[in-house]
Amino acid sequence: MLKLLRCEFAKLKRKPLFFAAAAISALIPLGCALFLPEMQEFSSGAEAVDRLMSTLFQLSAYLLLMPAVVVLASNLLFEEQDNDTLKNLMTVPVSKPALALAKMTLLFLFSIAFMAVGGLVNLAIVLASGLEPVGFWKLFFVGIGQGILMWTGALPCVLLVVLLNRSYIISVIITFFYTVINYIFGINDYFIMQPFGFNPGTLLPGSLAFRWFYQYFDTSNPTAQMTELMEQISPYFVTTSQIFLVIVLESVAFLTLIALVYKHQSC
Image 1 (cartoon, rainbow, N blue to C red):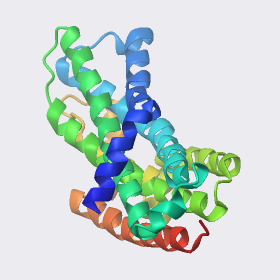
Image 2: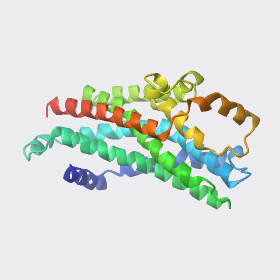
Image 3: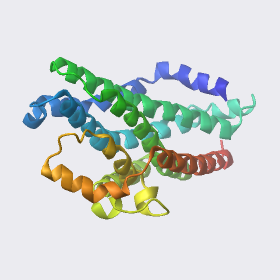
Image 4: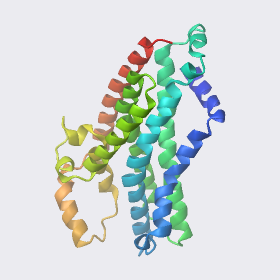
């Protein structure tokens, strides 16, 4: 597995798309900081960190990271078939499930890098504003966790890509709707205010992520609107251990299915 992962990393030299995709995590926070007046008038470093990281969590992670994972998965999983080299790999021999898992591990690391790049760009914006980045590193590591959660949330669409066997256009269309649905669920009171358990508010990454990361924002000087919102949703917050329990269970299930389907597809 480690040798396969090293090989996948070596291939990245010929894949500038990966580096470009990681860099786009900075686009939304940077655009908001530059062009939205309300994002240019921070009263404190803590407020600046909260606003910028909230943009990264609620826009970049949902609208950019999940689709990027699926598009890159399409490229990775069928690269050998497109180049007619998969049969050669099978004679080495290389296990197709191990090959698929190596590619998924690469996407896992990409998701972490995506959120890390966006977080560091936010840090640079705060420092350039002459403010102290109060609470940044706490939210930075929350962002890393959300990257892992978004990777897990994208696995159902990756499984669909494998099932459709290179039907890129259909996969991208379905991924688009899946991303939009998760974004809507992530801001919908019905799905946010559900107990931790076997329900859409827990199983879908949109609402689950909101119920986790929102509690880490600074609430030392809350507005009346913030106070009301916290009173409404705080009973439904989830802990870090609950988040990673969902991540482990869902990722194991979907990675197993991806590996099995990929294994039984013809070369």
